[in-house]
Image 1 (tube, helix red, strand yellow):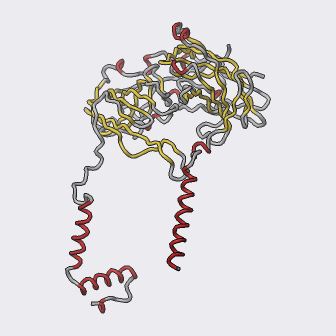
Image 2 (cartoon, chains in turn purple, yellow):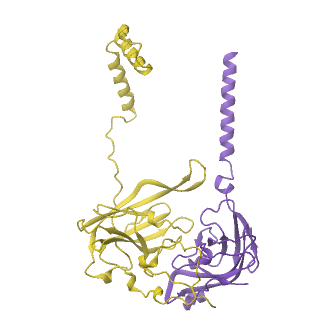
Image 3 (spheres, chains in turn red, orange):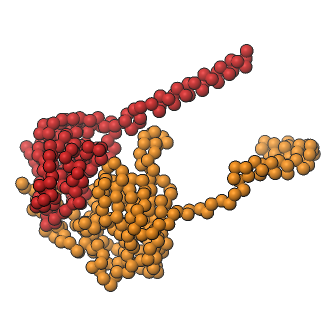
Length: 191
Length: 257
């Protein structure tokens, strides 16, 4: 009897451990549990995150950028998005901007020139919105289905808000055929 | 035999002496039988096979793509250069060694830790393990971020002491990362591993006499020479080092539509 009770105890412990492992292995996985809180909104409207609001005002594509005196080409296409950013209740910074294509690949803003608006370099005060443009290079084939991602966090986006705004880009063929360089608007007060 | 055991010794020593004494008492040859038995058992699982040599990363030729996990690196060549302003050497006698490579980000998102991709081996007097900087050939500017599925030709720079011998060959080690669950948080992410994915040994091309052969920042006009009229002062410095120490000044954007 004693042996049976011991065996039963061992089996019970094994069953509890197996059940725990099954729960841990079952979806959603840890990455999914800790994913950013997506705040979706339409192009041209304010999308409000935890500590900021962002509005994608305009978007255009270009084969080349003119930054100062430099002309910057790309093997893909430049996506230039005009943003209007505002802080909610406390001074804030936007430290991350990217686009996600239809296959899930994420392209961050280029670091080939400074983009202070979305790299934490521009302090945004409540009630004093800031606007400016950002530039991201993507493969031309990806440009037709892009979603803009904006967050105030720099690297660790876990369990914090991230704005998601679909970008209305239809065709980049004409842009690539006419590679006229375009300038990028620096951050400025929009109040 | 047991009488030889001292009760003043530690517990571990007591156990060992007691066990040895019992073995000798029961059968003096038993310990050798046991050792032979252990060897026989381990031999069945390959215990007596020749151990593989350590740190034998595969060698590949220049131009062969090497998969590093989130990146794929194709080493083209290694060159030796002298002064490359505005890159700033610690000593005027020092030299620059740079590796030219085609790099493709195979991860799902833009990659910023590009200095983790390669190391230089077989060269004396290299001042840093990581590359000092990475320059994009496309516009001769220092960058640290590359984007998925958009291969770029880049150069990784190391400073070499002028007191060290001029290298004739160098081995470029392509490092790698593994996408796996973190042991503590269970989050799946790209983790550094110690393994070198491949080594590429190539001759070092000395281009000190032909500076035009280098991705010199002077090869393109520097936007920093004509600063944008209203570059916005920033309370937080941008994530770059001073442009005076970089091979490409960081251009600024215009301030009016």
